[in-house]
Structure formats: C-alpha cells, structure tokens
Amino acid sequence: MTLLKRQFIVNGCTNEVEVSSHETVLYLLQQRLQRDDINGGCSRGDCGACTLLLNGEPVHACLVLAAELTCADVIETAGNMTLNTGNDRHIVSAYQNYAPGVCDFCRPGLLISTKALLSEMPTPTDERIREMIAGHLCRCTGYDQLVEAVNAAARAISEDAA
Amino acid sequence: MDYRQPLTLAEALTLLRDAVAPVHLLAGGTDLVPQLRGVNDPTLTLVDLKRIKELSEFIIRADGSAVIGAAVSAQTLKTHRDFKRLWPGLHDAAALIGSRQIMSRATLGGNICHGSPAADTVPALIAAGAMCRICSSDGERMVPVNEVITSPGKTCLRKGEILVSVSLPARLLRSTDAYLRITPRKKMDIAIASVAVNLTIDESLCVEQCSVALGAVAPVAFAVSEVSEFMTGQRVDQAMMARLQRTVRQACRPIDDIRATAEYRTQVAGVLAVRAFEMAFDRVAENSSRDQYS
Image (cartoon, rainbow over all chains, first blue to last red; front, side):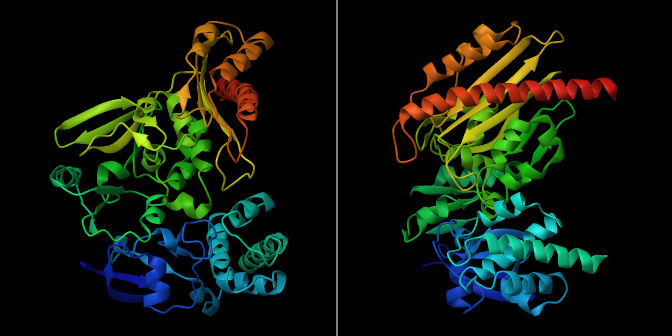
C-alpha cells in the first residue's frame, strides 16, 4: 500500500504524517493522532458530530480524505475553542449555560458550527440558527436549547465588542 | 487505491487517457467518499480535480454570462453577490444542496455528474440554457446540461472525459430565474418535486421567452418544451397560469417511493411551476422599477 507524506496544521501545531489514500481526516485525527475533541458518527455527512474548520470553513471530517491535505491547510477542532479566550470562550460558556443537556458526542461539532455561523453572521435570526442546526443530529436537547445557546453566544460576543 | 492530484487540466487528461484500471474523479467528495468507505481496491485510481485552475474558476461577465468551474463549491455560489443578483434561481438551487458543512465541499460539477433525478442545480441549469464544457485528451465538446445526465446515476461522459465547467448565457434585459422545490424537511432533504423557471418579459409585460425545467418527477431532470410554445408573445393572465399548471402536470413521469406518491409529485409540480413563474415575474418587475428610478 502506498503511503503519502502529508503536512498540515491542527490548532496551531504542525503535523507531519504518512497517510494511506483511502483514510479520512476523521480517522486520521481520531484514531491515529488520538484526538478526543472530535467524534465520528454516521461517516456519511449526516450527523455533524465530526464537524471541524478547514481553512475557516466548516466541513465534515468524515468526508475529507487525509490525502487531500496540504501544508497550507489549517484545521481547527473544538478542543481549541475550550482553551481559547475571546469569542470562543463566549460560545463555550453559552453552551454550558443554555444547553447543558447537550452531551459530549455532539457538542464539539456544534461548537465549531456555531463559531462558523457567528463569524459569517454576528447576529443570526432564529431561522438561520435552525438552518445551521439542520447539519447536526442531537437527541439530548430537543434543539430549542441549541437555539438559545447560539443566541446567547451572539449577544455575549456583541456586548464584548461594544 | 492510488490517489493522484494533478495540477493542470492537461496532466489530468493524460492520467485519464493512460489509466488501465477504473478511475474515480474526486471533486467535493460528499457522495464519493462515503461510497469508497471500506473499498481498498489497489487497482483503483482516485483523481482529485480540485487543484486544477479551469475547474476552480468562477467568472461572471458584465452581460451576466458566466463560466463556473465544475469544482466550484455550493458555498461559493451562494455567497457571490453578482451571481445572486443575475441568477437568483440557480443561486437558490445551489443554496439548498445540504447543510453548511456539505455546502463547503459539494461542487456544481458533482451535483451534475452524480446524476440524481432530484439534483437541485440541474433543473435551474437546464432552464437557464447552460452548456457543459467536457474535455478529453482528444479535444473538447460543449453539451447542453439536459443531455449530460442520461439516466439516474449515468452521464454521457466517456472514458477519459472530464466535466470542466458550465457556461451560462448572457442575461437579456428584463430576464431572471426562479427555483422552488418541496421537501419534507426544509434542509438536508431530497426534493419530492422541483421546478425552475427562466423568464424574459418584454416592455408591454408579455412573455418574450420562458423555459421551465422539472426535477424529481422523471428519471432525469428535463425541460418542458411545450411551455415556450404557448407562452411566447402572450400576456400573463390566469388562463396562462392554468395552462402552465396543466402542461407541467402532463409532462411529469414520476414514481412512487418512500418520500412521495407519483400522484402527489405530479400535483405539487403544477403548483410549484405557477409559484416559480410568479416569483420570476415579480423579480423582473421589481428589477425594472428599480432600474427606472435609479
């Protein structure tokens, strides 16, 4: 089996690994790099549990091949958000306070999607928040808590900026 | 499986020409990557097309004509301001493809070449009169979008060919488009029926040109050619809308499946056609009055 040498950045750290042509970024991060801040669910882009930021764009790690990565690619996972300050801290706190029911299975992906949404749209309507949530399956919250959490995060970020 | 990432179109076409084993073309990968899960065929070659310039370019000219590379993502189409203004129907179709994460990756070329009868962009492209540029190492050909998909999951692409880009014609004065679909869920679902209308109105508010295309109500998306025959040069009234609805329903050849019955699809396609026409008509009127006072 041919292995391909790949270099890329995860949460600010450069990684250099050999990948096989058929492994996904999810497999690489979770199984081989042993990261615990990304979860695999459906493996076909439905559940949103493996959402991460690839060069600032939210993507499903299960739908991106590790072979596609180059040294210019920057990956950000939810683990980084819990350590960060600023807007990331507001998003993580809003989920803790307004969506305490959401479990650790869906939360990393939801945090990433929320970060992507609020960077594109600092004050989203409930409809836009629900559009974002459509990319995630969450059995714990009934979804309303998630809308409240995203709204709370948006408020906290805008108050901080004022 | 052998992964190749050509940097030029010529390199990709040579790879395809010389391939002896099966080749899969990878663009966004939203359909292909799950299909490849568990497949570890050493003879298979995966050709990633995303680094090729011709497949990534997105050009909109002043006259409204456009060239969209096959690897341009749905999110790029959704966020392009000029594209939304000039091709609102095609814009709306691209914006409905899937979740935000899917939008980042899914490509226009993938939406066409996957060959789904319910692909959102395909009816809008057919109504717009879009042409596909298909290249091989022997040359290239331009094929109308409605001839690219031949049956569910099948395209007219021959061995060694790549869909490089899609061209949209120039926008005429007082013309626009609209796309509507019906799904059980608003997002993350597949159309039960979809309708695209591309419309040009003359100064006296008569129809100058109208094309209507349907998705998810036949094995492949198609244009309802009878519509332009009875609409051209006519004034828009209730009788015309009733005839549009009737003609669209007669053109439907749907199936019963888990999402809807054939009868429901037929019924709803007629309703969507009238709504999409009215939406396009209102957009033209709105644009005309804005131009008048600007």
